[in-house]
Amino acid sequence: MPTPIRIGIVGAGNNTRVRHIPGLQAIPDVELVSVCNRSHASSQRAAEAFRIPKVYDTWQALVAADDTDAILIGTWPYMHREISCAVLAAGKHVLCEARMAMNASEARAMLAAAHAHPTQIAQIVPSPLTFRVDATISDLLAAGYVGDLYTVRLSGGAPTFGDPAAPLHWRQRQTLSGYNIMNMGIWYEAAMRWVGSVQNVFARGRIFTPQRRNEESGALGTVDVPDHLDMIADLPNGAQVTYTFSTVCGLAPSPGAWLFGSDGTLHYDQESRKLFGAKRGDKALQEIPIAPEKEGFWRVEAEFIGAIRGEEPICFTTFADGVKYMEFTEAVHRSLTSGEVVALPLA
Image (cartoon, rainbow, N blue to C red; front, side, top):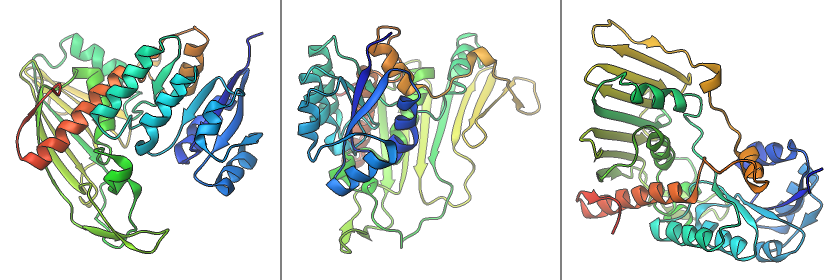
């Protein structure tokens, strides 16, 4: 019988409640033993809702306690580096919510800590948007379905009209989210699985509602994360990538990805989670069936526990891949502030 793996939770937010806690509780011989949120009352509510026996008033006490083997970090990005490094230094495994960190230097510090503690498992919660089709897209590209890849178009965000009256969200504040913008990093991480990393990027963005009211304090706060973002980047093979991420494009087409080549086209529609394709000479796109053995799905918690038990490696997502998308995220920020093309990887 396997030795139970004891998990502590720092930050039982929405994704932790919806995904991670049920996922971990469904795995045999995994115990959720402790939780710490921003307040004792919030921690107690989480403990009662999910039958977690121990509440800690500080994350430092939870990480230092000898009642856990691994820590799940569900906080906002501004805490990811400090907690992750403390967890690894304490000799424990870490599963950290995405986005990895505030910026590239924090992500590199996390990777260095993981390298310094190679017997511990270090995982970032992956981008799930394209799990279903990732293997099929990679296989089709490798088999030459599109021929020479010419251009990739990615669009993210919700096709909704902007709401100037909506309250200030933590994702709109760099002090809490860092250089992460909307779901840009999630889409970039997904695209890396198909076409790899870009070698440069040029970005333009706009903030259309510069101030919003903080729901907790009632005070007006400054928005310093764009509501709309356009980018152009180059892949090493010469293909060009364009990105659009927006929360102000009402009734825009469904978010997704297009890959255009010399001989074919691939299109992934995020809303339907379907993949479409066409070859030169076809009159229209047709749905491409996803073979059951190729269909990916969410198994983040199972992968984390499997890696701890030595049954499988971490694939989605390693700290090394997290650094790659955080370098892209910071390159976008640098381009926005400088008005220049920024080369990758960052110096």
